[in-house]
Figure (cartoon, rainbow, N blue to C red):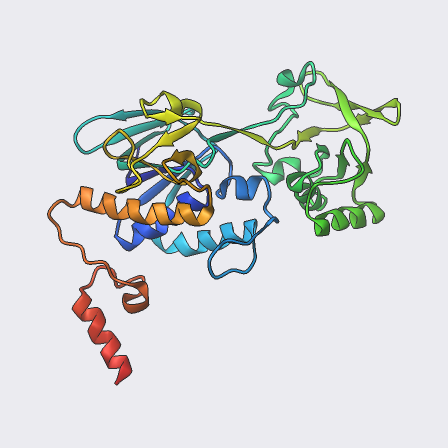
Amino acid sequence: MITTDILIIGAGPTGLFTVFEAGLLKLKCHIIDALPQPGGQLAELYPKKPIFDIPGYPSVNAGELVDNLMEQIKQFQPGFTLGETAVSLNKIDDVWFEVVTNKGTLHRAKAVAIAGGLGTFEPRKPELENISSYEDKGVEYFVKDPELFRDKKILIAGGGDSALDWTIFLSDVASEVTLIHRRNEFRGALDSVEKVQELKNQGKVNLITPGEVVALKGDGHIQGVTVQKEGEQVEIETDYFIPLFGLTPKLGEIANWGLNIEKNAIVVNNALDYQTNIDGVYAIGDVNTYPGKLKLILCGFHEATLMCQSIYNRLNPGKKYVLKYTTVSGVDGFDGTRKEAEKAVVKKIH
């Protein structure tokens, strides 16, 4: 059983920043996410996409933002349950909530923060007749462990950043990498497209465009695929087929937790602390809704900050908390007093 102060459901940017704000208040966090790595859709869908509305950054790549957030929260040592989906929420007494994942992992927390972005992500599966029989038997929708493909033949399908990025990365891992896309043009970052073309010229990657996988073959485990290309069908041997066609967001089991839902979003009290209709359960970021809601990362950061203040007061009734600025007290000084912080500044001035 995993025990924590705040259980955060969703490891996107809002969920990750919550760890920092909670850490300043000496509150411990643990994060659950259905994806195999932190970062949410930033890491999974467009890691190289530039983001222009993060304060202090004229432009920052999505993947770089995730890396920076992970570095920022490392000092507070959050826990992670990755590759698992939260399926049930129960309040067991006046203090504790219990959350269980689809793999049976039990979590207990004094507060629950739902920061699931647009919800859990399910892979968009190609419409192939027997694909379900090969799932986890050669068909992989996520690259959870690159070493699984060490010295193997792999075929990746897709035209976005994920398909391009994994083609580049796995070209140094697998014995043979083939990338297939239905069109000649890719949707990913230009530098990634150029890198794949360079790898093709070097003979490290096989590139098939336009083309489409139309059938899977193999006895127990996938052994090959049939590709439709330029009006004819071609058989290609492969140990793994990795279709990377993006993810479909769904609220999932959270919709059954008794929360007020409007248009696939959780209704919260934005006038106070982004709490839901269940005392002690909050929703922040793109997963929530309220009058005037804007689905921006910086808005999620703001919501996380106010929520953590509310959780601190809820868990420490009657304990006086004085807001201090990190520019004065530093990150480690948040358990001191304002007077001590001011003395430190005076000493530096004189």
